[in-house]
Length: 466
Image (cartoon, rainbow, N blue to C red; front, side, top):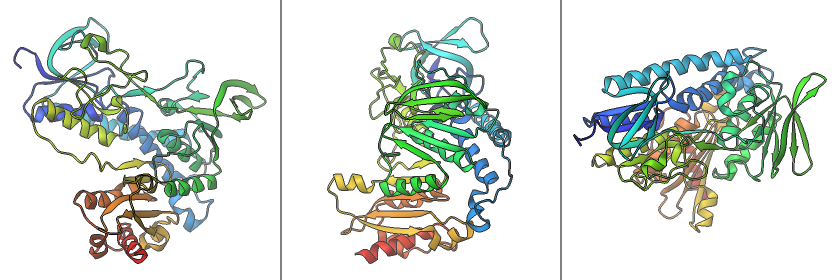
């Protein structure tokens, strides 16, 4: 590889790009990471995962959400919560994350360039500096494309960042709206719908699908929808938007949303959240012999190689599941594959974390998938209100359910809604990865009082059903 200046050039510094770069550096390779923004971290750290989850944490605190079952539904830490209250915390966490990420790459000897990368040919890459000036050129033996995605925008909608905006614009909002219509009931849309509803905003969700988050277990989603309606969220499912425009009203400007069914919605603000598009438009992929679909996504094989063997693609730019956790693992595996290092993973046991209020996390198969595959199963449940820890923290709605084979008692899936779900799921994931059974959870002693006890309670419930 000495004929090239770098063993690996990584395009993008989000979770996938970071992990690919660090893994290659750990293998003693010469690595350059190009980031077209002036700060590292990509969408995850700057406008997506970290800010939105920090915004959620601030919402949980100021709204007194967890204490309502104890002190009453009117309880709040602060009566008038502002966007400044929420965004101050998000900016603090973001700055810390940027510093940690940059320091990690520097101490691993990774060269970071603030420039937009594009292909000149499969091994030559142009670097156009963010600050302006002439582009430079580097050569690479291997390339990892980890440019992530951008919010999908309808060209017929006049986005202004104030009345009509996308999830990338939320951090620039000045005021907390009184009403919000969320168009698109995907993960991002539903997360923000529950966050704003918890803050007292009147929220309407519109989606042309008949179910919210159809890839999640139906019982878990039914619980979420019930809780959303308790927070005054209106769900308009099976509906399609025909037009969005800002209109003048008696109390200032409003947004008018027309539905194809003839219904009309008037709202102070609109969050347009119908998915994301791969940020590949400026990469000049044709020069490298790599193609992308109409949503900017790149197809890869099991080793994350594109049509060109030495060019890899990882993270959100390759599509589902588009999670920070899976993107990190894809980056690591791609770097190992590029340099002939054996690496293993558990691709069939990826945990999914959805940071709604309350949060949801799942691993393995759900009831619908098992039924469609004609796989027999039984269910064990534990509800938080019967667990001491649930009573202590005030979570009366939480639920953990285990799906298992009634003959072998092997665990087929774990599904959780409630406080700490995204942490709690890893117990089930570990037991499943090691081929564990319901008997292991029945016989294990968990700390008391903890949410982990739910596993033992659910195991007993499942065994009783047998």
